[in-house]
Amino acid sequence: MASEASASAGPLSRAEVGGSIAAVSQSPIAIPQGHPAVAAVQYLPADLRSGRAYRVGEGERARGLFSVLVARGMAGLRITRDLPGNGPEAGVEVLRLGSDPEASLSGPEQLAAAVEGFCSPRKSAVLLEGLGYLSIHFGFEGAFRTLAVLRDIAAATGSVLLVSYPAAAFSERERTLLAGELEPLEEDGRPGLWEARAAGLFSDERALYDLVRAAKGQRHQADLVTETGFSKARVTRVLDRLERKGLLRRQRDGMGNLVILE
Image (cartoon, rainbow, N blue to C red; front, side, top):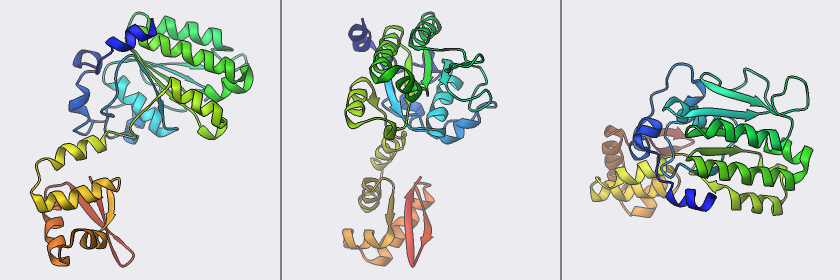
């Protein structure tokens, strides 16, 4: 069932999230009222697809990406150990994992049933923040089996499963197994945005831009002089043009400038 759904899963369409991923990944997302965590994510990752399960960063990064999907029209389900009020909850169903009377879910079976019931009638965004809790209380094998079930549910319903967990909480073997169930996700959509912008630059602009892009968006200006062979004056003139185009900015760093892509 999972393989068939995964094979047919495509990029999230305008009807599914209110705008194509390709378009969103190349332009800033307006931050709607009621979604403060969206400020943590400026661009949707270009490789985000429906029917898939992803390992995302912790904290605001994960919650921000989840809030973006909800703000753009997907039904949202957050599964967490946090107490109510900690994280994005406007328009989102929140289920709390725990053994105390206030918890919504006490174990893997309840969790799987709740996710299936939520996702079955509609394509949804599901954020799971309690994988470490499941591993501690039900053993890694139990947590892993539950994750596999949730992944199958996402594949069958065309939903997106985002799983946030601290890698240090798991052994190397466990991390390897988790990597087999969860796809890596770009930290954000900026690498794809940078690549698209580079295509329209003049050759000298492209030379500098690509060097900064290859360094994950930050490079010292002095390094650009050394690596291109351009004079200091020429590098300054080219960076001036790129900055006027809104493609980068420079900030003082010690005795020199740090070039940062926008």
